[in-house]
Length: 405
Ligand code: PLP
Image 1 (cartoon, rainbow, N blue to C red):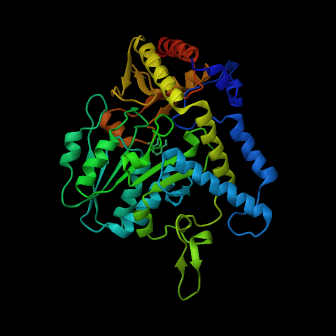
Image 2 (image 1 turned 180 degrees about the horizontal axis):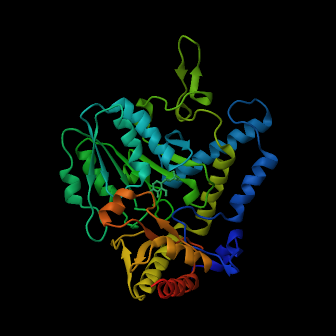
Image 3 (image 1 turned 120 degrees about the vertical axis):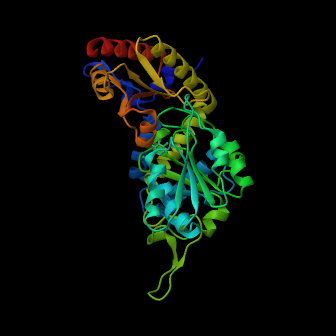
């Protein structure tokens, strides 16, 4: 039995009330909550080990540097990267993709080249490539989905041609929950000599990710969706790519030597970490990863799947509900609409009943256009959610439907 009571007791925010109702937090795909140990680690770092990293000879700076670099190794182990220097700290998934677009894209893409994306991408994996289009005549090829919200793999294979230079694809959709067969997709791309960037923002909280087994060239995600702090993201890149890429931003730790005539750059990973890093955040992220390991990632993932199936069945019982995204492999994310009820109205009423869900286009407007809708209500689960909360949520949705119809 998965002990949710024990888990919940470690998340202080879950005792909060919203409009005098117990908070039911179903907005985990946007950001997850933090266990006490992560919150404590942030305070502890400020109390005991705050000094700028990498630059000091004094004890405090050395301790802060060691903690920061230990966090890098913790991330390396978590995703099974070959080297710690293949882990670049960024501000989040978005910055990590912008880094690859800005650095790799500028170095390796030329007029006429093509990038394969899918229709279910988050704006963070669309707009950085469009920004590149302002300087280079590159083309974006978009893979469609079927009626279940699964990628059309025939269309994927057919999208390759002699101009294809990169595949940039989400591991899991933040709207539909669809888990894409990225290992298979990477293998196919590599047969064509095309590297692959995987947006792991929605996968990393719910799947065990092994970047070497996947053979991903780049894998990116955000700490705040996986029980870690905001403002920390990870760019994993294969050493051969990161070595070949120019710096993305200048200043601070990314230099080897600076003169007005000629500047040389630091080695990996520092080449891509200009300025003072968020070493308080990286340390707290390491604590979040330790917490996941101690709690049992596999057990958490299995339990989240149970919640997904339970909640799906509950919602399907309610008349007029339509679920968007019925892929065979899904993360615990349910997007839905109820008859003609506007998603904002539903979201606001649910909030009055203590239920936090996300409404709108979820930063996936091209997907919304494909589905022919403006937005959805999205409920997304984490390991601290319960069946009782889902029962209360289903009752609240039914009430909303009766009130708004
Ligand atoms: N990619 C996906 C699939 C996401 O779900 C999100 C956030 O919801 C992002 C990228 C952007 O993440 P961040 O805002 O942490 O950079």
